[in-house]
Length: 336
Image 1 (cartoon, rainbow, N blue to C red):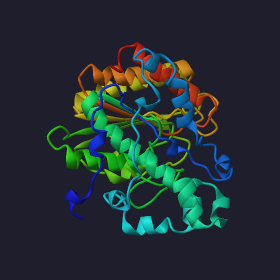
Image 2: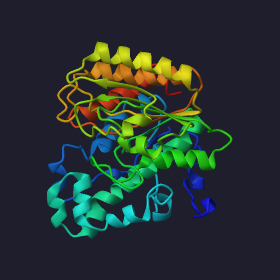
Image 3: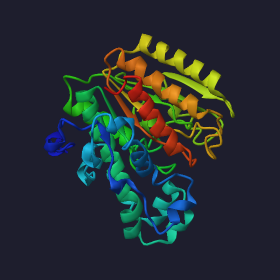
Image 4: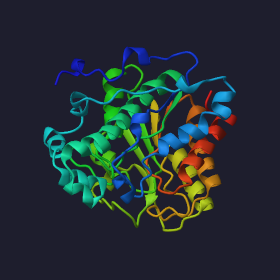
């Protein structure tokens, strides 16, 4: 396909005075007559963060109103084809395949058109939000998508509740449409799970550096994908704040010594929180806030734009912790 045929970001989504580079849409929410509750993923996490963040320090301080965040448009089939194979996209027409990706077996018995409306369409909006956030980060120096981070999906396979490879799509978009500003990209993946999707897509790419810190004893245990990690830490179950933050600080310094990116994609999963049913780590809310502050301060001090995606997080406390962390970043002067 001709690259010029793909329009990633609307013209009106250029930088707008009075708006924060935070991306969110009501269309993010997965709604499927309660079936979404059979997976621990909080399908309304973005909505809860939006509600918690909007009235507080981020917006009251700047006299911002309801329309102060950016909204993406749904990704088209042509845009998805920049990464995904035709065969993979066709496979999503079968409910059994979608149920496997979503990890909700009952979805296999649901007509496919309802799965597209209630699950796949919201995920296309979230993936579009990641791409829009990438564009905004180059203009503002930072951006946050209140969704996305589908790091288990690669070009020809989905999994782990991730049907679209938004991180890979974002990287392709940046390389294709921002060649003067973006030549080298770093992924900092701090979700509790290994980011095997983007690791498979960018195996042996010298221009993409992957830092991944994850629990080695949980899904996906993808040893082939692991070969793409250029700086990594395999954590033990119940790892706590002190060890976690020390390893993160070391990896950030080591990665920057080896590779100087033009932009950073930060996959900020909160499934590292203590009590998360899937992450099995013991990081406190304070530890997550310090983790986010450390990532932002490291790269923003060097003038390197940061795109933050929310990724996993399966406790009721997750949305509140993310909202508090965003406000904390603002209070530290990292979201200017």
